[in-house]
Each structure stands twice: as structure tokens, then as C-alpha cells.
Amino acid sequence: MPHNEEHYKALIAQLDQLHQQALELEQKFEPLIEKAHPNFRNSARNLLHYLALRQHDIRELQESLAQLGLSSLGRAEAHVLTSLEAVRHQLCHLADCAPNGKPLPVSFSESQALLASHTQDLLGPAPGSRSTRIMVTFSSDLADDYELVCRLMKAGMNCARINCAHDHPEVWLQMVQHVQRASRELNLPCKILMDLMGPKLRTGPLQPGPALLVIRPVQNELGQVTAPAKVWLAPAGITPPVQADATLPLEADWLAQLQQGDTLYFTDTRGRRRQLSVVHKEANGVMAHLLKTSYITTGTQLKVKTDTVASRKAAVGELPAATPPLLLRKDHFLVLTKAPIPGEPARFDAQGHVVQPAHISCTLPEVFAHVKAGQPILFNDGKIEGKVLQVSPDQLLVQITYASDAGSKLRADNGINLPETELHLHGLTEKDKEDLRFVAKHADIVGLSFVNNTAMVEALQQELRQLGATNAAIMLKIETQEAFRNLPHLLLAVMRSYPAGIMIARGDLAVECGWQRLAEVQEEILWLCEAAHLPVVWATQVLETLAKKGRPSRAEITDAAMAQRADCVMLNKGPYIVQAIQLLDDILTRMQAHQHKKTSMLGSLHISDMQEQTE
Image (cartoon, rainbow, N blue to C red):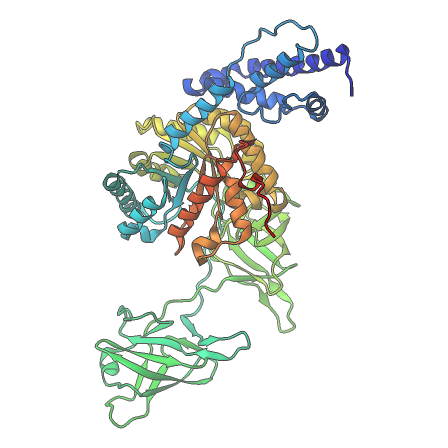
């Protein structure tokens, strides 16, 4: 469709207006820009320019530019003013217009160099074959497995993540020393990220149940027994020589008289008659088989009917108390208590009516002052959903709005999410301050979990200054709806430190924002971080099925390929973690030839080589 000069001038006027508004927003927040680290100053300006641009719906402008064969501004994140000026310059070839002459803080090439240098300073040098780094979350057993740490590094791990919500400093130190030793011996760089636990809301303790052990044989889907349960009988503290399904503590003298082939008879807590068959005798215990489900408690009597033994009876020793979870169903009620009272299940009368609803405490009772009736509440990574019906100074009454058909289990230390509640948690927790003394000495990067506002970022920066760790990198974990709402301010706050980065913690973020919004939310985070030239870690459930079960799902392969737009991808440990790293390395290497951030690289495609088909 032909256009006249007035049309071109109208487009130029729109571009000039966007440029001017970007500069006005920069001027408005100039004091925050001045507080940014010198390495981040121009990046902070570009972030504000991008925010100004995205305050407008420019779809019609994009369409008009596309019809002229010009850049559509769809990839302007990292260099906003330069993109606007480049398009304007091309339009000036179609209509007379004076040069803009306004400052351009970040050029196309400078934006790429800024992100590359910020990423290298945060996460170390890029691996030879790919630009996207791989991070691996350590589990407790890696403190005792140096060889596996070496295998992880050889497979392609570039950063080790240690979560301070688990274990203790002695275990963390072992992990750190393994990584540092492997890095020296293999001559491979590997950064160490240590996550502070942060103000995570969790359920409190549950009331311990009876000292009861339930032992079940292996059954198929029809309920038929396909293999017996292996039960190790030994004095307390003696571990079985091979894997067993259960352990029963018994006196050594009584066990010493048993022989292979003996049958032990007992009556379980339900009055069911059961028997154990001794199949193997060891120096300090016996292995027995059990063919029927049994409920055994401390003091359960075992009897052997043979004349060759001196004592035919023995009592099962002290068993650990079981802590049964709360079983919650749709429309049930749950009381969340402020006081740390051990949780208990609901009580029912003879007719099945609830006499007392289930109750459990919350680890951060200060949030009770901010919760309002009608707000949603979620438990255990969103597996249980509820609505707050009543709020009092000491408790919340919650009605369960979603649970599985058979009921969902709520245990101690399960996560609690209040996605629509502003929690007003501004400082670091006492545990975080205590852990930070260790983290500041041993970690390259400090991860701030469940950050919600700039006050939390400033509190961490202040603590690091007091500890003399001013060069420690900071990574903000975006995992709440409040953090997402405050993201521009959080980015400007963390840019006062250098280096710095962002982790998209998709687990809690999906629970907080809703599964249906996760894709949209993570895209917006990626865009804003690219505008700020801040490295991004794509985290949670990447190749999870492969790491845990040895074979990935098709959807996980696509997710891993999409993760290449981030600067680092995080894997969680499982039995097949080495294979997961190797596959992720291959996917990231392949994808970087096709995609960088939002930009298609347009490398040659193998499928484009049209060969004449043979009959």
C-alpha cells in the first residue's frame, strides 16, 4: 500500500515521543541511577528506557513499520534508544527530518558486550562450546562423594548451588571443599552459589503419633503379593547388610539362637496373626520375609515354636514415633495457628461430623497481621488450595478449595503461599544473618530467596558490607507475586552491587502467579533483565524426569531448548544427573546456533538442503 510523506512524518513523531518519554523516565529516577554500580549505570538507564517504551501499546506502530520493511522494535530490549534512532534514521530517507541528536547510552554492540561481561563476572568464563552456563543443585550426599562432584564438572557443570535451607555448615564446607578441589585438579572453573533460606512460609511441626511401624510386602495393581517384605531383625543401631524394607530392634542373645528356616509368630496391633520366616542369619542379626501387611509397635511379642531355643519369646524394642500427615479434602476446614502448637488431624463424632477441624502452625506468625479474609492460600507447592474465611489475631480459618479426590497430605515443613497478601517482610531473618557469616567467606554468589521488596536487598547489601564481603555477587530469586510486581525496583536495587543476577524460581513462582500465567511471567522477567543487561538463571524442573528416572519427557526437551534464552540453566540432582548435564549441554550448544535471547540467528538449516528424491 503506497504511503505519503505525511504518513512517514507521523511515524517519526511517534518515535520521537517514545524517545522523549524514555529520557523523562530516566531523569525522574536519576538518583537511583547514580546509586547503581558504575558497571551498571548505562544498563540502569536502558532498563528505564525499556520500561517507558513498554508503558505503551505500540502494536499499530510495529505493524506500520513492518509494512515498510523496517525493524519492528520487537528486539529493542538491550538497546532501546539505539533501536528507536535506527528506525527513525531509515524513515528520514523517506521524509525530510532533522537528525535527532539525543544521547544514546547503549549501542547494539555495546549491549552485547555489557551482558557478556556481566555474565562472565557473575558466573565465570563461558564454556568452550556454548555461552549458556549450567548450574547444579547439590544434595546432602555430595558432601561425601568427591568423585561424583568431579563427574558433574567434567560433564559440564559451571556453577554449584548449595541451599542453606538444608543441612548445616559442616556439610556445606565439605561441598565447598569438594568443588574447589575438583576445580583445581581438573583445571575447570566452577562458581559456588549459596542460597539463603529467606522468609519462606512453612507449616510447623505435627503431633507425633504412636511408635508404630507398618510393613507391607510388594503388591501389583490388583493387590496381589509379588514379593515379600524384607525385615532386618537386629539389636538397635545395627544396620542391615543389604537393603531392607524395615528394621525391628531385638535383643542380641535371643536372635543368636535363631536359625535359617525358623518361623516367628506374632499378633499385630489390629489383632491379625502374622509370621516372619528367617531366610538368612548374619553374625549380628537375621533377615526375615513377611508376606502380609503388618502393624507393629514397641513391645510386640515374637514367638518361635521350636524346642531347640532357650527362650521362645522376645519383645520388639523401642520404635520411633510415627508422625502421620494431615489428610485434607475439598471443603474441609483447616486452622492455621500463630502459636507453635503441634498440628493435629480433624476429630469426628460417631456420625462422621467434624467436632474439631485440623490445625497446624505457621513458621512466620508475623504475617497474620497482613492476611485478609477472602484471600487465597496454598500449601505444599500448590497441591492443596484454600481460601481464608476468617482472620483473628491468633489464627486463620481456611476452607480447602482443592485437594486430590483421595485427599491430599499436609506435612510439617511444607511450603505455604499467600499470593495476594503483601507480607511486609523487610529485613533478613536471624537464620539468614547467621548463615551469611559462613556464606560470605565461602561462596562466590549469595542467593536471596523469597525477596519481595528493595528493603530486603538493601539489608543484604548492608550485612555484606559489615562482613567485609563487598565484592560478593548477589542473585535475587524471583519466586513470589510480590517480587514480580516489584521487579523493576528490585533490579535497580540489586544493581547497586556488582556483579549481580536474577533467578527465575519457577516452582514457587508458578504457585504464586498461577500455572496458567507462568509462561507469560517468565517472559516478562527475561525481557526486563535483558534490558538491564543482568544475567538470568532459568530454574526448577529442567529435565527433572531425566535426572530422577533416566528418561526425559518430550515437553522437558522443549523446555530445555527454550531455556537457552537465559544465561544459565539450573538442574536439580537425581540418580541420573550426569546424563542430564550431558543432554542439556548438547541442547544448549545446538540451540545457540539458532537463538540468542529473542533474536533468531538465521544460521543455515540442514532441512533447507533440497536434494532430488530418488525413486
